[in-house]
Length: 237
Image 1 (cartoon, one colour):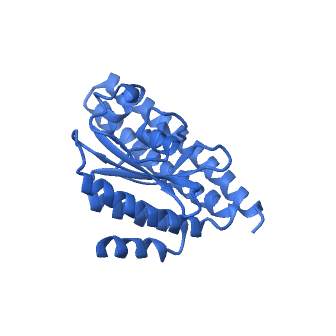
Image 2 (tube, rainbow, N blue to C red; image 1 turned 90 degrees about the horizontal axis):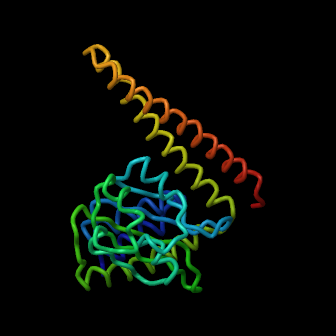
């Protein structure tokens, strides 16, 4: 309980929403020894879940789950039911079938998602932890996550005092996603040069195609970030 208190206080004392969510995620992953994780908030404009903090995932995962409003994923179920959801093995869970390909590409087999419900009963988001291998969390670990999520939800609700907050946080995530795509493009371009020098023209061409697609994503994510920042500055404070 002291550890939960310390982690929660760190979240509560965060100067900005994005920092609070990053600290919340770090705490959640450490509490259950997770390999990956993310925090999603309810987007007031769409009603869907939007990732605002993540650890260990690729730009492809962020693109795929850029908006969640279905019951197949663990986070979607947790949000709809407002209750903790555990998928012991995504390969064996029928409802998760549409998402197995991205799960395999991302390297996780198990996931737990806990809703963030503030003291007024309002759903603020979902915090999820992912594991490389099939895993059935202990009841004690799930109870700890419930306690922790309650405290995180209170801190998030306190941060969300103006419409500008979510816009700015979302813009920052798109900037980070753009950075991931930019890094991917650079790696693909360098790989194409190496392949070309080695006489592997087909491989070089494929890597150049991937680099080009990644650069397209960079522009798209930067534009989304600019649009959200404009909305943040235009919103009443």
